[in-house]
Image (tube, rainbow over all chains, first blue to last red; front, side, top):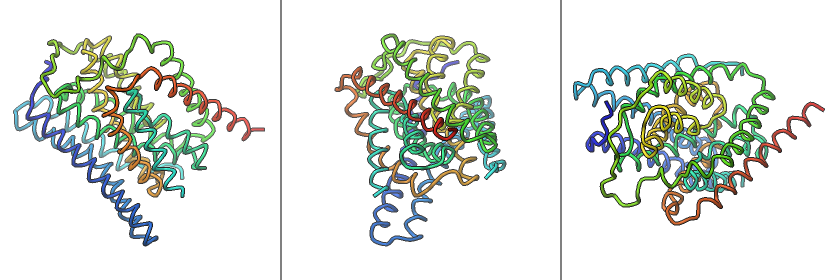
Length: 99
Length: 265
């Protein structure tokens, strides 16, 4: 089935992405501006937090969608979302290669 | 100084990406490698952060216009994320010259594809109307899931390998083979890019291939550029911008090839 036009679902997922993108933007910008005056580890730490939040945003998006699918009793897509989440986590576990 | 240049670079890549619908990631990696002296693997990892930023910002707009098929996207993400994560893992064992050569070939291929299909595959048709009114999407039923999943696996692997979004593969497959309207295919592909890029970016990050001090200014620029681009898109003659993009891609492909040959001689 193609189930487009579920305004509430779309809005929640859009909100996750928007909040993620905007917070990352402001974190990174803060890091950059801060770095102009106080070079060193603190601004880099802020920038790193921004990068990590950016990497986490899609993961959070999958978690939220997974939760929404299960709440709607749409189990099929709930399990699919969970599968995507597992694959994302696999990347975090096996992320070691030649240096 | 480098930081300011990176913000400007990100800004123009984001602007071009939003105007043409062709992700800026394809430009960022070679520019970082060629002109900022960043090794190719770190260049890929760093530009992946910008790719996620673009996807998050632009797909939140598509979602608000209700043109994204979240269920279809989530299903195909099983394949793109798997392809991306596995390939990102394997890239750690690849020869850097091989990666550079592959990127040069991919740029050349993409440039030619855009030029030959440019007329047929008009980006404007894929854009939802600027108004927030009801978008009329004819009812449809996604078909040929195995084919869609297979293509998504390839798109994901390419994303993990080169740090790009893979839209040029997913959009036509969804549109032509899976019977999905172009507007929905574009929005859904954009939606999938965030998770796909994150699947590989996590692996790159763990390996130390994301340079935070370069990724931050780049992402800041990309964010601003794609916001402006999304606003300008309805008012700008896209064809000129597409030719500009193709010219840059061809130039970068050539420069990468020369760079490679110099290394060997």
